[in-house]
Every structure is written in C-alpha cells, then in structure tokens.
Length: 134
Image 1: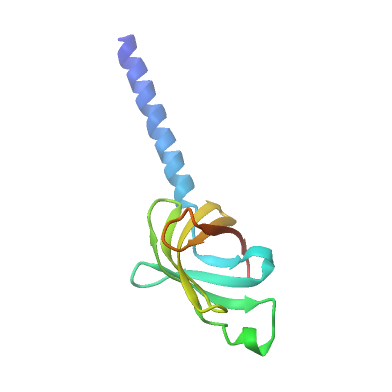
Image 2: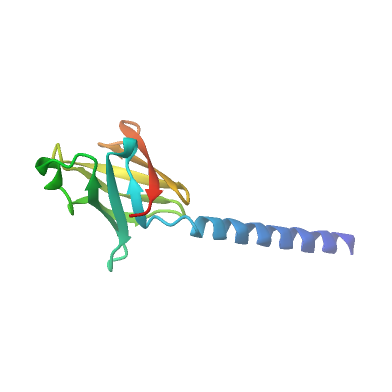
C-alpha cells in the first residue's frame, strides 16, 4: 500500500513539474520589439500566416538617409520554432547585403540570444537582444 502511495505522489509531482515547465516555456514569446546589441536598432518580430516568424527593421540609432533606406526591410526570415525556446531561420545584414543562418534562443521574457553563422554554428557570432516597447 505504501508503494502505491509513493507512486501516486511521484506521479503527481512529475505531472506538476511538467505543467510548470510547459507554462514557463510557453510564456517565452518571440514576438515583439527587440533592441539589438549596443542599442543600434530595433527589430519587430511577428508571426506570419504561414506559421513562421519574421523580423523587420523599424528603427536605427543612425538616422542618416543611408540608414533610413533599410527601415521596413526584413532582417529575420523563415524562423521556424524548433523547441519551446529555440527558433531557426535566416538573418540578413543589409549593410553588407549578406544572409546568414541563425538560431534564436529566448532566454526569458525580455532577452534572447541570436547566433548568426555560415555553415556550422560553431563558426559564428552571438548577440543578446533586449525586449523593448515602441
């Protein structure tokens, strides 16, 4: 009888743990406005009708005409959710006109890490972005 009670307690504890982890992971939303490394620009990430995520440049610190011509340009394309907190797709650098593979990991409600790379993820660079309001 005691083993049955222990089994029931373990099951309830495990179920509660899975529910808590699921709730935490679900709360890590990628959509919103993100300030890039060093506050250089703001990217608005949204979910499109195709179920993928995209990010467009909505603001830059540099307000020159050259920089303003990139406003509205897609910076992140085809981001597919791979896990509760990870997304994979493409990142475009408009200044160099180069596109890289990227992985995004949502750290918490207000931080994400974007890793851009060519070929394999080991050869690349990671940036921390911070969620902001408009």
